[in-house]
Length: 223
Ligand code: C5P
Image (cartoon, rainbow, N blue to C red; front, side, top):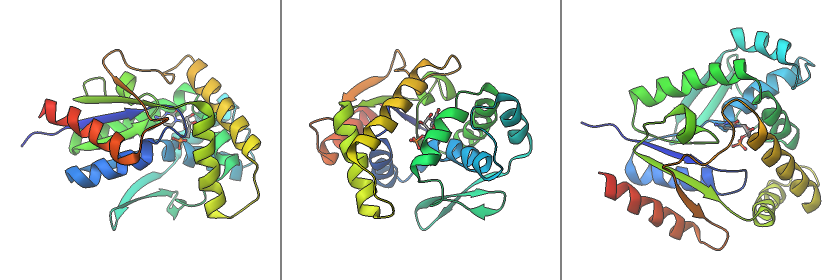
């Protein structure tokens, strides 16, 4: 039977992971959150007191990094050097660090290798920044999810508040997102961009169901 790859790209807070998880369940295929991989690299750098923009040190760091994606109870878990870091990577500090390490070509090459391997062995819905444009240029369905920056910041802010870990203001979340938008779009190697053949979906005023159904409509067209 035939494999399918669905690429979902877009900036932070556009709804990629929420939507990709639901699509993967509905279609019974794997979900891969590629951002988690860059977050794991950033976490390792932070733990080792390495500046997340230090090209040389990061290139060396990823030479022997052990990142494993494990699926348990329908959930993606990420292991860094044998330890489950799925929760530890969800902090504002790691978000910024991930955006920084993601500008370094050696880091990307290493992560993309793992991403392509998973896609070659499974039907997958993969979310990230460069999936349709670089990682899986032949993906059957490519979606570019976008939303107004304040709406995206609002969604992240509400998520952070629900987690109730540290107090963070809306303005801080907005600043983080603007920093990452700029960093992710302006890097020279595989930047955040809409692939020419991607379908853009603006989720600013859409419900989760509406976005899911829009995407499933395009999947149906294909298969
Ligand atoms: O998607 P998430 O917010 O978890 O991604 C964290 C960071 O990882 C992004 O800001 C981006 O810089 C980087 N990233 C990337 N390419 C991907 C996925 C994530 O550069 N495919």
